[in-house]
Amino acid sequence: MLTCGQVEGMKVHADEGGVTITRGGVYWLILPAGYIGSSFWGMVLILASTNVLTAMIAAGCFTAALLIVLFIAQNWTLRGLCIGFIVFFAVALYLQHTSQLRILRYIILFIGVMNCLFSVYDIYDDLISRRVNSSDAEKFAEVCPCPCNGVAWGAIWGMISFVFLCGAMYLGLVILS
Image (tube, rainbow, N blue to C red; front, side):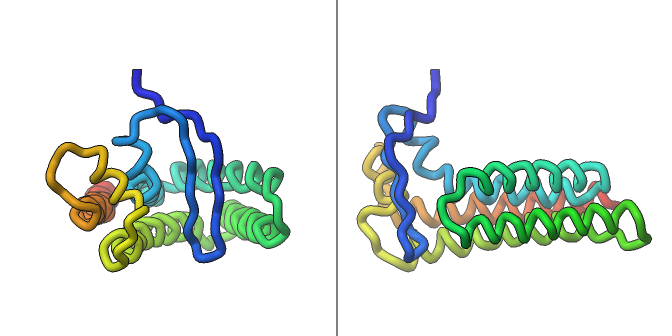
């Protein structure tokens, strides 16, 4: 049975980096999950933006996640951001229902595209241009039996993320036409 492991500790550093310590699990899934997972969810949001109902569902899920983070956040900066985005989505939903302004689909589309683009950029910045021996891609290269190094795995993950972005744009255009 595939499990993602038990998280023992998580630290986020001020330089946008961090570390998660797990016990057990499938490292083939855990190590690329942050980078590729971000692109995957961006793709989901792009596709959700093609329909008003799915955009409302995505906004509702996003708001629910923000509410959860709001209650577990340990600093006021994160709480303030959560409150700001919750108010932003509430105003967008209100305008969606009470006026001719149909902005919610574009907001969800923007968030999805930015998520995909930032994932591709983050992979390039963290795994390809910077030579860090403790990156997720370097750890993945250690557990993988193939002769690829961390930079190669970073490039592969970047291509997968870019395919998610292009695939979402293509499918979105097919759905809209």
